[in-house]
Every structure is written in C-alpha cells, then in structure tokens.
Image (cartoon, rainbow, N blue to C red; front, side, top):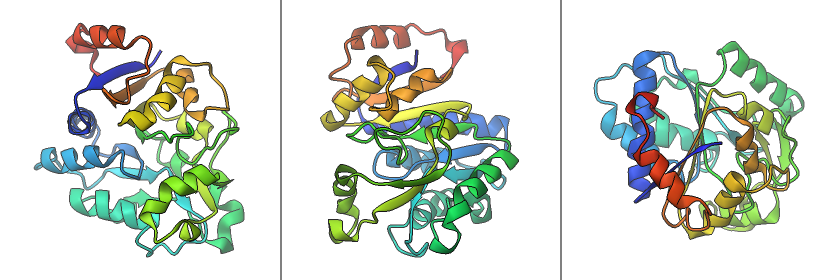
Length: 259
C-alpha cells in the first residue's frame, strides 16, 4: 500500500517533498529526478529553491514525464521551456543533464525508444514526481493505458485538453498528441511521489489509492509499486475512506523509516 500523507496546504507538501529531494542529492550528488510539469509540482520546486542553499547540484540529472508532439521546444508552453523556467534555471541545474522527450515530427517514430534508452543509460530514475489528472491520468497516460507501457505517443482526450487550455490562448492551440513516459516506465522509478491538491482531484485520488487497480484509472498503477508516497491536502483527501488511519499512521511512524 502507498503511504498517504495528508498535509494542511500545497506549500506544506512542497516542503515535505523538497526535503526528501535534498536528502537524496546529499546522499547521491548525481541523483536522477523524474520531473513533472503543470501547477501541481510548483510548490515542490518553490520549496527546493528556498532549501537547496549551498548544495552542489551540478551533477543532478533529470527526465521530464512528457512533451507535446509538434511543438517548438522554444514555445513558452513546451515542457522543455517550462522545465527550464521552473526547475533548471531557479535551481541552477545543468541544462545538458535535464532531458525531455523529443516531440519533433521528424524523429517521432523512434523518440520513445530513444528516451527509454537515455533513462536506462542514466541508471534509472531515483525519485519521480507525479501529479494526477481529473481523469486519473498520470503523465499523459490516459484511461485505457497499459500498465506495461513505455514512452510513446498518445492522443490526448478532450478533458485533458480542456484542463490544459488555461496555459494556451484557446483549446484549439493545445496539441492533440503528446509523447509520454508509459506507466511501465514510471513504475520502474525507485520512489514515486504523487501529489494532488484541491477538491477537484479528490475522486481521482481516492480511486488511485483505494479503488481497484484498473487501466480505466491509470493512477491506480501506483498500487503496484513498492515505494510510493502520496501527498495530498485536506480537500484532495476528502473522499478517502481511511483518511483517519493515514493521519494516525503518519503521526506515529518511526523516524528511522523516513518517507
């Protein structure tokens, strides 16, 4: 079972996860991070900026979860641009060590295989940050995605395009396709952190954590992983049947266990 941590606010969640990332980098200076984009992980990156201090991050490596297909990497809403603006530059990471899937049309047929090879050559991902969509998707693995899937091209459902339209001038500007790490790729990371905030994510969180493991709710794949930490605020936890137990378990957890 995943460890469920219910916090008072997204900011508190950011501090919690950032502390674990700092601990990881201190123990492994060339740590490999799995980087999510969107609004959910922003509190983590903001907390990291405040906590990273004099830590040497020059050898930290990173792999983004996904990228739009056909978007110019210099476009402000490409995930390459977002990762650069929100993670690479503020934290002082080496941009040459931070990777995003290649969404260019010219190489798209083998871009998934190329990305899988790069992750493997880096030794795999140590800590993967995840959000969850209202449809239950993680990365851009929409309902129906195989639990064994690897990095590949996916067609975005209308709900996901509507959710992402706030980052573009209109929904018509949101790309129809993306290239995303697969559920099988995500499950190979050594530690998963899934974050969710707000009442709008409550149903997806409850389904992912307490519901059946089903491709109809891709986030439920986390139940198959041996080391998962789910960090949610009170609103996102509002539909969890065992929320009181999760609070009790975390409050009484032995300190030596860590996260």
